Image 1 (tube, rainbow, N blue to C red):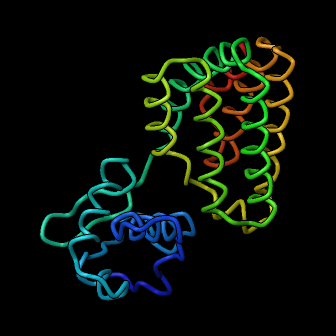
Image 2: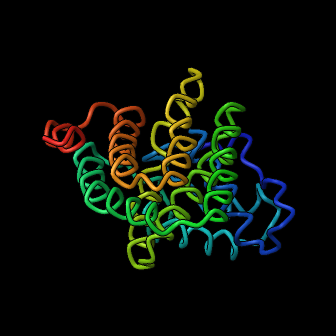
Length: 234
């Protein structure tokens, strides 16, 4: 079994359910790289570290398994999932098919209040990146993109994109933050807000397409040639 180091429950004042707090702690450990892919972690050992029973830990593990972030190892515990470059390329390809058109639709439907809410979320993405707060960054980023796509009115599409993002959004973040590169793509969120406010659906679709491709390159290395062609409209 791997050493748990400094994994601890985060101070989440607004979340009262122990299961959610444990899941936040595990997610934080994955983001920071403290919990490494391929190493096995047991629920009882984590429960002892957190000072809780094993039940909420097992429940949180199941939630993370459903998100595709960990896999259950029978009679041992769980392991952080390794995701291949091919899988990342495939997920990126699906996102490119869904998100640009949904964002364009959002730009045509958004109200002034929608723009204000998006801008507030975008500012949180930028602030968290500048502070190097990985957990706040991924949560704000998820909320921003979810809100943007939700304006298009297709709840099923939003759920699908959430699932895809949850499977990939943690990869490479710790390395980017360590080298101070986390802020390179976040400013694009503010530009997206400006395009939504202007109702420029075509430009927004183009930016979302570029954004997805850039995130794929920065978080997990260079994409496949097929993905690069898709990003560039080839």
